[in-house]
Image: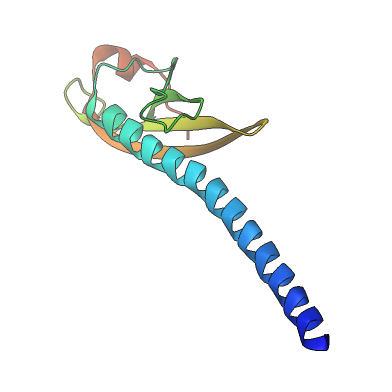
Length: 132
């Protein structure tokens, strides 16, 4: 009888541990999926020179690609640094701020990424101020 009680207590403890592990795995799965979506979107933004500077661009991820999550993104491209010689055609550095969001349960979760890319200066870049 005593052995049965000890075994029952052990089984209940193991089941509680398994339940917590499954909950944590589900939470990490949505976060990992959001990270992969963010990497993909950041790569697209780093390669696309047509994204307008100093304005917010946003969109939603395809639910099939997001694993059924309601998820989206918001990005802003700004001129980060000009070269010492500010001539048209010189290379400056853009900063891309990317915020990715997704809905997990009833909560909206977010994280942000920053990326930098070179670009050739245009006349409007030279007249604009650069934040430091």
